[in-house]
Length: 259
Image (cartoon, rainbow, N blue to C red; front, side, top):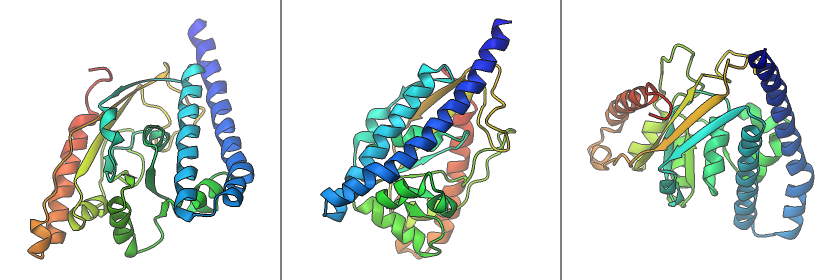
């Protein structure tokens, strides 16, 4: 009986969390960002303050879900994210992975779906923070490289979408192309969630039997050399790096939380 009541509570709390998230995004768009544009004229400072606001909002959201009993989490190696100019690549098991990562990175940049730029709840934050949209075509890779070289910490999920429930990963080559053509070293982040929740193709109200337990580990950088680019073999190097990343994330995501 207690387990059933706990599950019902977590369904309600999950819905409440996302409703709060939506209202928070709307409040940023209607109240904070217009005020920011009015008081701060310098575009780069506007962007920095907008990203900082999203960072703190996401930190609150994760803490809010934790307080409601929806999830628990453990962090390892997050001090590595305090550096500037990082290309942060992570696997993508759940809907809130990007929220977790931005909550840990004050000056985060990221690549977002174009549809989110037209969503009334997320349009304001995306425009104010000048996050990169994935509809910019071939120029997106150069935009990503420029962001990292400018000192931003760029967050990308090489899979492009959430990992299916069967755990089979299919990485796209975009992230590897950024790393090779930059060249940019990679800061890999392994995200594990047990039991799995908020997964691809699963409605939010289908919560797992127990609260989701996240384990997020920031690993040592993967060095990417400019030698292959100089040799005119960037495409081949990107393919090889994608395979290496696939193996790396597949192994990392198969462990047990807290292991």
